[in-house]
Length: 165
Image 1 (cartoon, one colour):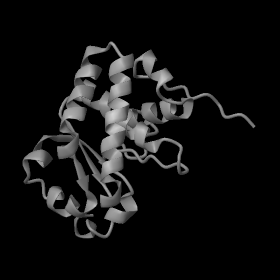
Image 2 (spheres, one colour):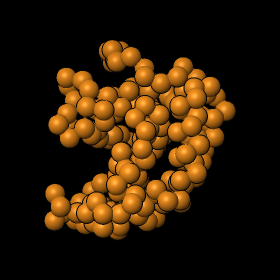
Image 3 (cartoon, one colour):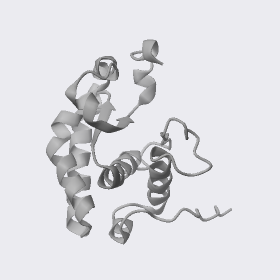
Image 4 (cartoon, one colour):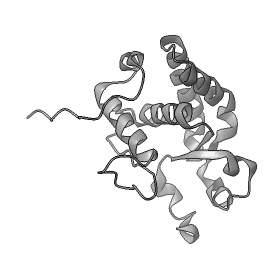
């Protein structure tokens, strides 16, 4: 049984179709729409958020990175990633790999600028989930400039931030 084609227009550069798989393209388009609070079917329209959920190995990390780059290239600011401590090095490597591929393939100036910034700030913006409670108070310099929050393995951070839910 074939799935119906997604009617969302692709908000990114055509060159990304060589970097991301078709299901990732659809996920990035939907997540960007939700993060920007657009779309009548947005699950979290009031909160401006999205949930990426898929099987292991389907590329959710690159979907999140694609969403972050497009969001930041259009809206400015900084993205902050909360990840389990055991995955921090993996995320740093994935940011490096993804941004390198984007910089090689893309000629869009705002996206290139966002990719360079994301790559440069990676060590500062990839935080372990055990720092979520402190960040959620909103008093740090990083919290004040954060425009997009990405939480990997959110179920592991649930008990940490329970008092703030």
